[in-house]
Length: 448
Figure 1: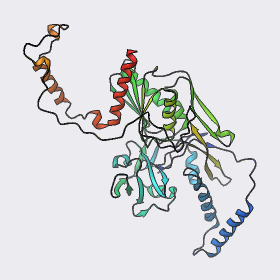
Figure 2: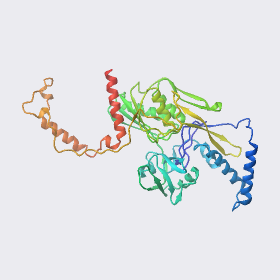
Figure 3: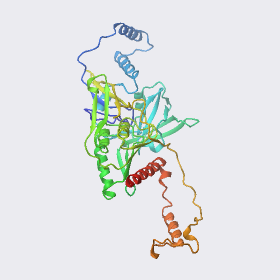
Figure 4: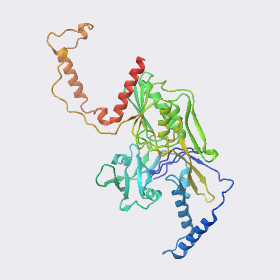
């Protein structure tokens, strides 16, 4: 599994390993011109421990290994997203975003010593095997995860496409661990897909934020307009289980719906970490209502978009509270072609809300429940038009009057044709509720 690489010059709002940790906006930084005063006494303690390990540990340990482990521990003790990048990791990071990598197709972070699934990526082995956002991976094949670093866990999950790995998972609501076997594959991430849900109402799904995602979203909206007589009455923007990606893409996507004003800003202790991103004139939907679907797997760049549309009152956010990944990481190259990735700032929505460890609270909370279609009754309900000698409508011609028997026959025929197609509420309850709200908002907007 390969780290999805970000072309930054390099601004990102989340990253993807085939199995990966999330990190926020990322920038390459020059080494600082001045170094802070060193804590001499603490360094003496470090030197003494270093010497004790060299002389007394049960097996010999190379100096390089001890120093690298010390650096890793120093950074990992700060927060889950600061880390040391060795030669291979730093090289992968600099190669740029490809949108294609080998692995399982899950976004992960570390929590309480276990690997936590932030989100499975659409149409990947992990998603197809039933891995869910919030799952805790406690064992990889026969190896316990407790005590591993995230990089160690990622290394185990890497492997040749076609090879299998068994994940032991703890899931909320389950009495015992789940055993899920997954076949590794080359993961090709298509970040944007779209469809017309009903005439005039579009659906736009973003699974990750890659460099071309902003342009792909604009092309998708144009295509949806073409399918609907060059105008959309409303749009559902689905960001569920989207773990983030390139910051510039999040800004571009927000800009497609927001006509002016601040989209997101960052603040930190160093000057370069203070940045503001503004919208350019133009709203591709011309003010048509937008419903933004989010859940606990929506992180980083997804939260930037949801927060921007919420603060600008440009869209209604529905679903569940988001992940809360609102920090910025800076990649600082070292002299030996390695680097440290360190959290240097936080994201803020246009209204000044910090996303970090708080997330975006939906305007309307809807659980991702599963519903099933009710069994159809063999009896057709009696209507006024079925009654003998019923009073005619008075506003319709005889040709427009529909005989009750013909109506019933037509309804049954339609049902027979669609018997194989499940209702949207059965396939995706949250999406069906978003569409209903979108239609209601459109009706009110038209009447006003």
